[in-house]
Structures are given as structure tokens and as C-alpha cells.
Image (cartoon, rainbow over all chains, first blue to last red; front, top):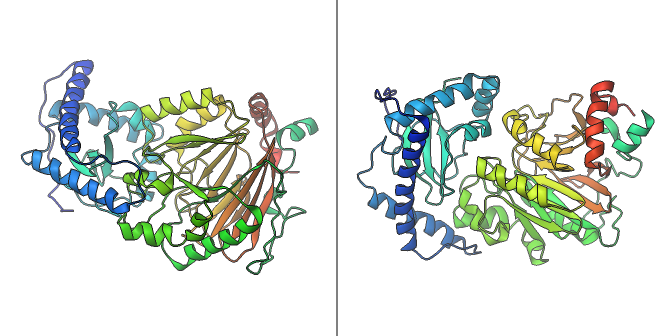
Length: 177
Length: 314
């Protein structure tokens, strides 16, 4: 976990039709998903097991393979500037709407992780996850089950669940309390 | 009005935390001689409930030991785990120190544990066979006349919503029991209720006739007065504890925040019996709840509006 100097404003982005924007976003998610599956298929399948070493080592091995395959990955490849602008609006509605104060308060009460994670970095083991408000999840574009949105301090991250790895992030988009 | 009370809550001991006639409040049972207030009827569904247990600390082991003692008497078949199953990491040693060792005697007796994920849990815990999640973050199973819905409240996204709605709609069991980490109703000062989650889940629970909801997250025990006809419990002190953290309001029917605790539950036909036991073996709450049919819940909701939540006045 590294402290990184704060805000980089999203780049100016051309206005895209919402449907088209979500379609392109989903396309990029599926490209990532293909990479994820290719890497995972090269490992022994993880099935429910009593052998906890298998669970831990599968997560580590998958993360390592994805890291190598995405060594050149950069912030904004999936959360492109257009997507960021779109998401910022949705997040603003959630945090400043009727339940906004409650949302901010519940995030602060949830022992939030402070600082910033980078692309290809693992979510730290043993650190509690900040719950993403379900009302926000209903508003954001749906993700395949291998991925989830996460909140780390003021950043929104895209997390590979099984590899426990940051795939992309949008910085300083979660309002300060 | 009287008919309403009879329908809405036929038996509920104790109101406002007062001890029911058959509870063993303030008694400390020596190991090996525990008694239970549960009726132990034949063919009933019996289970235990723990939340926020996975500390690996001495108190978790002591609660587990108490559960084993009660198992001798109650013979519960399974345990619901309300999340935060492993604090501080999910290395093999964490599974061993925070789950396998404390609950070894119960595991050896073939007691099954059904876990949900808390905010301290690594999602890959779902692949741990002894948590019986089958690799899924949310799942459902049936025991006798009860259908259990184990939810992931860390990440309640549209696919989970659609799944839950379909499963609730198709469930024909008498009892629908949901459990997940973050409480919809709680008087815990540390976290309190998750209002955003309540906004999403409560309409589904009402629409499809959920009877009971169990959660953790706040490190206390609380039984609420029924909310819109649904019974809510917070049982988040299976290992952790926030002493003195309950801020009692009209919501609270009974609470305990002075020590760790776990619940024993027995469902027999239309009645759910429960007993909440502290780490030291004290029964801190017990009683019996009558199943409220869906149609009664809707009329009760209107009744509540009329009478202004007077149901906590017996």
C-alpha cells in the first residue's frame, strides 16, 4: 500500500451515448475476463477443499500469472476517461442524494482502508473490505462475477475477486466525509 | 387489538428484556451439567448461531467450548456463521487457529458450519469445504421446514438481488430465514443498521414472507421487536465484544453486551424457540416466536402505523 500524491482530474472525454459507453466498458471487461480465464485455466481448478494451502496458493499463483500477463497495464485502461465521467455522476448521486449522509457515515464506520492501491497490487490480507453501498451497485454497470467494485479510501477500484488483485482504479472519486 | 397481538406475536418472552418464565437468566451452569430452555421436540430443526467469532482469542475458544457442552444436551445439527469468520488474514494457520481448533469437538461430532462472508473475510473462504459455501458467495439450503438464505452483504449487487428474488419466490418452506453479516436493524453504537442495505432487502423480505433475519457486525447480542412482522437478531459476539455498546431504543426487545455469546435455535412447526448463552454459560435471553404468515405481516404493518409501535407494551 503506497501513498501517492492526490488527485488527477479525469481527462476531458467526448460525450458518448450512455448505452454505447456501457457497451464499450463491458467489452473491455470481457477482454480482461478472457485473460483471467486463460491464466486460471493453466492452473489446477480450485474446488471446495479442506486443504487451505490449496486455496491460498491458488490465489497467489493466479495473481502472479495475471500480473505477468498484464505487466504493462495502466490506470484508465478499463475505467477510461469517458467511463470515469459517467461513474462520477452516479457516485455523486449516491453520496449526495437522500441517503448520502448515511452512505458516507457507514463507509467511515466500516474501518476503511486508508491510502492507495496500485494496478496489479493485491488487496492486503486481513484488512477489512469497505462495503460498497448496494444502492450504488444497483446504479453502476453490472460486472461479471469474477470482478467486483471496491472502495479504498477515496478511490473506486476494480478488483479481481479470485486473484484478489486490483485491475483498475479511479482515484479521488469517493467524496470525503 | 387483542386479536392483533395474538396473531402478531403469540408468544414472546421476555418483552423489553424481562426474563421469561422458563429462562435460566443469571444462572451459570457448570460444564457438563447444562440445561436448555428449548423444548427439544422430535423432528425439530436445531442449530446454533455465532457471529464475528474468528479472532483466535481465548474467548472464542471458551464460547466454542460452551457450545460443545450445550451440544450434548441440545444435539444441534449445524451452526450458522454470520461472518468475520477469520480476522487478520486467511493463511492456512488462520483457518486452523481461528476455526478448526476452537470448533474441533463440534466438527468431530459432524456438526456442519454454514458461513457467510463478513467485511473481514477473504472472499476465497468460500472454497473452504468446512464452511459449506460450495464455492459460492451466496447460497441457500433447506433443513426440515426451514429454508435458509445465506447472503453476501459486503457486495449486494444486481445478480445477487435477482438470485435472491428468484429463490425466495420459489421457496415453499414454512420458515424463510435469511442470514448475512451487516444488520438491517441494530442498536449497536459502533456500526448500527445498514440503511442502504435495508432499503434494498426489506421490500424483498416483506414481499416473499421472510420470517427471521440473523446478522452480526456489531459485536453485541440484540433481539429487536419485530419490524414489519420480521424478527431480527444481531449475534456478533462469538469472539469479539464491544462491551456496553448497545444503545437501547424502542427497537430493542432484549440485548446483551457484557460478554461474548452465541444462540441456540429450535424450530418446531410454527414456533421458533431460542436461547442466547454467554461465554460463561449464563442464559441472557430466551423465548419462543410464532411464525407470522405473509398476509398477517401486511395487515400488521398497517396496524403498526395505526397503533404507533405499541407492540412492545404487553
